[in-house]
Image 1: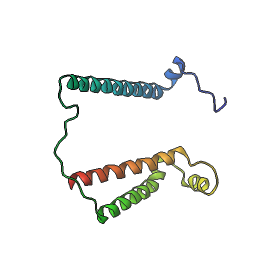
Image 2: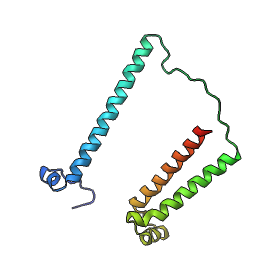
Image 3: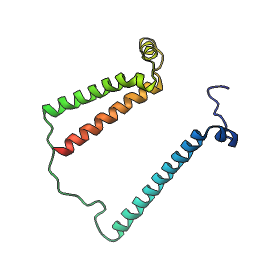
Length: 135
C-alpha cells in the first residue's frame, strides 16, 4: 500500500479494532458538540443584538502589569516544561536515540516526540495563565 493511499474503513476493520471505532465515535461526538456550541452561541448573540442589549458586555478590570520577573518566569517555565517532557520521553516509549539521530540529519523529528513537546508548551501556558490569574 502506498503512503498516499487512505485505507478504507470497513465494518470488519472496526470489529477487529474496537479502539479505532471508539476513537471515531469520540471524535465525531466532539465535532458535533463543537458545531452545536457554535450555533447556540450565534443564536444567543443574535437574540441579544435584536433585543438591543450589548452583544458582549464588558466587565470592569484592572490591567495586570508584566515586569522583568514575569518575563523571566515565562522563559524559565517554557524551558523547564520542555526539559521535563524530554526527560519523560522514554516513559512514553519514545526512543531518544532515534530523536537524536533525526536532529543530526535532515530527517523529520518523529511525530510522537513533537507531540510530547507540544504538550510541554500546553503545560507551560496553563501554569502561566494560572500565575496571571492569581496575581
